[in-house]
Image (cartoon, rainbow, N blue to C red; front, top):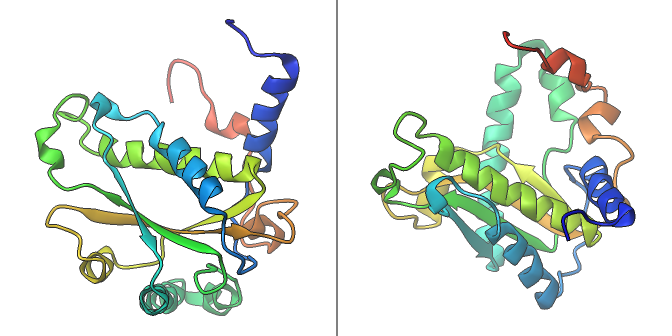
Length: 210
């Protein structure tokens, strides 16, 4: 079959359109079989040179979750200071749900990436792009299953890597909050909170030259 049915195609576009970066969660755990399906979806992501550079660390120790939250909160305050006149506005935003969600995962780049030259000789950052593809797979699968997910990037990767005992060369790139939600945001949360607004595709698309 070369083409999916109209209903199947519509479902793909719908989950892309309705995916949200979630910050509000219920604390109920994600069922183990469902979590396994979601992680398998992430693991089926494309990767440059088939290097599969993603590593996922599931945080099940409550004390460790609290320490990760403390690192994120520290960076949240530093980010607020760097924002100058928008500092107070930023501090009113809910930027993570680490202590609220059912599951916390840390997505990391593996160590030993210098061995992989295929597709990275001139663009070494393609390893990070591959991890982002895995995270997006996870996000879309979660939305299809009615599970909320939020990508948290407010942290210093060095102390977080030390906290998680990452080997030399490995690097954490995302703290992922996942869990059941009461409802998905109608629009992206930062748009709803008037922090930023989305730009139209026409502003991002050109032909032949920039």
